[in-house]
Image 1 (cartoon, helix red, strand yellow):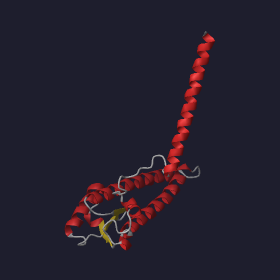
Image 2: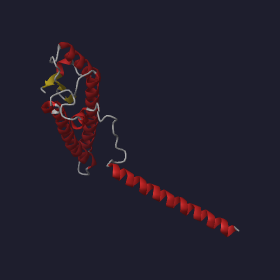
Image 3: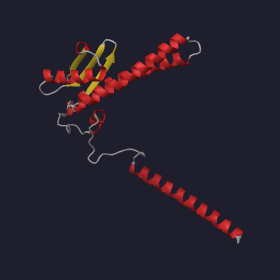
Image 4: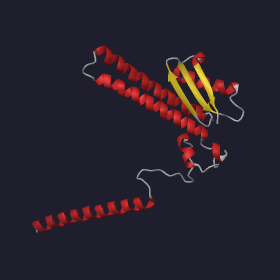
Length: 191
């Protein structure tokens, strides 16, 4: 009787494993048939408020702009973000190599560690500035923080940047970074 119970438990476990393998296989086949990657989100109407994705997902002319300018400003902003990220990755790699190097002295390692922290702080502040400016109703924005101040590039508006726009963006930047208004440059990107 004991042997029968053990064999029944083993058979049940084998059956459950076989069912799990089959379900996993059938789910993967279903996902492959739809052409989607697991975890990939799809919006109901295919639209997004993400400025990096909006040019790629919108049909030409669908965003209310003419087809030839639908992705022009987004292209600049995407390119600027990509260039900024590549430069930052390169600098971060060099700094991390210094920190991890056996040949570097303690002062160089400390200085490189401080530079990494500064870089991380600037990255977070730039992202916050960009998100807050976009939340205020501007189509797109990219911020650059350096030792000399902060530069903010915003997408062109219908009437151009007004004094109220400049004041609003300056307030966001000073609140986020503590940089005085005299060290803030706000540039309107031409469409």
